[in-house]
Amino acid sequence: MTISRTRLLVAALVAPAFALAACGGGDAGSDATSDATSTGGGAAAESYSIGITQIVSHPSLDAAAVGFKAALEDAGLDVTYDEQNAQGDQATATSIANTFASADHDLILAIATPTAQATAQAITDVPILITAVTDPLEAGLVDSWESPGGNLTGTSDLNPVDEQLGLLEDLAPDAESLGIVYSSGEVNSEIQVELAREAAAGLGLEVEVATVTNSGEVQQAADSLDVDAFYVPTDNTVVSALESLIQVAETKQVPVIAAEGDSVERGALATYGLDYEQLGYQTGEMAVRILTEGADPAEMPIETQTELQLILNSAAAGRMGVEIPQALLDDADSVLD
Image (cartoon, rainbow, N blue to C red; front, top):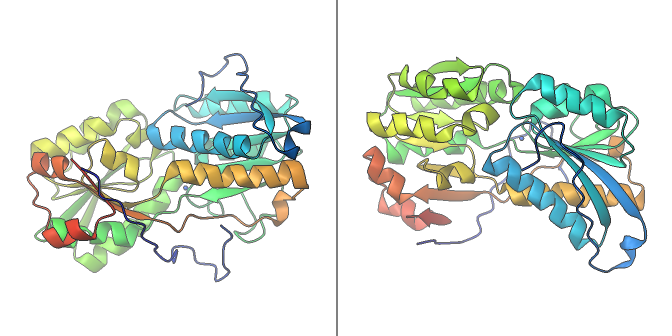
């Protein structure tokens, strides 16, 4: 059963006071993938070559790529895509960026913080769009959210950690501790862990963390934490192995709060989450402006998504020994069985 209703939340997540305008590829080294599209419209007179680099395959990042390409198709652009996936390896991400630097692409899309950082270091003379990057300023990618200042701009998936952890007041009111497993190599995760510590303090929760360096370590790290609930940030390494963490949570009979909706579909309990396909589409619309209107990335503010949804998984609740209050069910945008 799915209950849908649009819920607009104010994006009070970003410190700057300005209003922002509106955080699966092939294996690395594979041949360029041709995906020419022409759906009509005057913009299809010229062909474009776009390189897409993605840190790892998981549903959220894959959806961002799908949304990006859909926006260019809807605009009627004729595009050939060179899609590469680092499979979670930073050295491979750097190699892909260096390869793209010598390629004749018109634009690069970097999906997730590690690939964005690698691409920004390697390429300075071709427009770069980023998506699924939590904080591009903290990641050293831009001069500011409002004025990026270089050849790079895009969209952030900065998530409402306060609201997400606030769900525990209804779902686990007796919880005293919160466990977070995250990758020590992802700056986006470090930012979210700090936000989670602040939010947890206000809820009277003690935060316990375990770091991993690859997806194979996620289950053991989760099992090492004796906590009353788990929070999963938009950590690419952990989300790619989400099922192993959920298995631990179900065994311990504790809830899992996620940072995005795809993780709830995969078995987490709840989130106030982003729609990554829509975020990718929003990034694609920025690409259209750069390619067809000559928009300058240096002057294009980093954009965020303000349409967030309360998503609950009632089947996961049963497996984790959690009873979802009826009031929360009534307020949800989507309830998954």
